[in-house]
Length: 480
Image 1 (cartoon, rainbow, N blue to C red):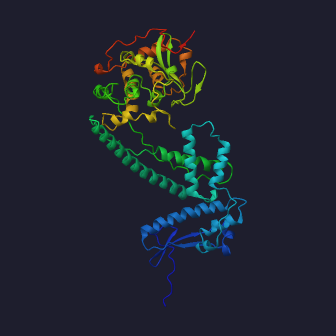
Image 2 (tube, one colour):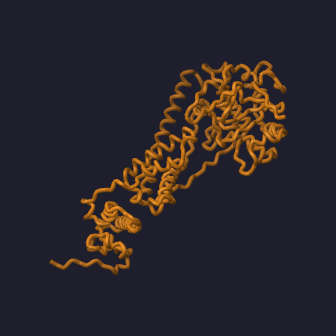
């Protein structure tokens, strides 16, 4: 028998830790002198068969073992390691020890660090949606990492978690797309059965939003960062995992778009089971730039007179005449604001509708969901007549109102006051300190005009003309 060929240490075509014997590849690395006492027989060299003769496959395998060796060598240098944990770190680099290894149970796991994180960060003040997001994310982490000690979690483990999140996101997106197509088809069939015009489906916007994936990764990073702070691990292996968030740019509506929207808005006599929100939510959004949920959640007590000007009060909490607080409302920036009612809304009969409403809420047909009332308003999305993928009701209405005011030279601060944008260092809620501001905002909102025929929506009879102190107003805000 011919003598076995020795491993070549001088093969310049291979990286330092990748060696070749015959046709097979091996991973080989020297054990640092200060760690050799952990290895059986004070082993000085680690050699692992990669079980492949293909160079490309060997490159991937040796890099994985190289990362593992670097991680385990660093972990073995930590003080006060339990013997069972040392055995696991060594066995991962010495294959023959894996069969006899028993995983330690007394070290901190993902579940333990989640409990510590909850102790340091109360979830009581978070919204129901946020609480559910945290709960779901924690369940995902526990399922993926199981009871693996934190000290054994590597960057490869975290990258594997990210890969799993991406796969789940892609699968969920496909399922949602299919569900939306089916829902639209069912709605179109219903329209045809009722003898109504089928508007058609809007082309879905093809985008890869990584926001939700990044939320899960940020929670993993926060947990492991806490573990670093508590000296449970020496470094955070979840650093640098977040994906690039591709923000979609939405377009404003032009007057032709607005005309299409006006043409599909139904009047009470035009549809069976007509709902007031079908008409008024799009119109209020069109002339305020408010978010859909902000409009859908309006109460009658949110229509207020201020300095003789009729206003919408977009707020989180409201108090009726008996000082009863409703906590079912929310706004994105957390700051309430007053937006004057546009004269066009009054011309189209909003005050008449307001007088007819006998319930506390302006649109009682909409129910509150986890994310607010806006989720219940689906009619407009299903009937939306514009098929451009970058023109969507909520975002494009806000862009349109903002650009209309900008074209009329309305300053940024006043546009932010109306749209509810965060203004950085600009003082919020200035309505309570500057009694002239509401007049300025009234002038600003009136610059929002459309070269569109609203005649079909104009009530056939005279509508109430609003004057200061009108009896229909639920409450007057005294600024004196």
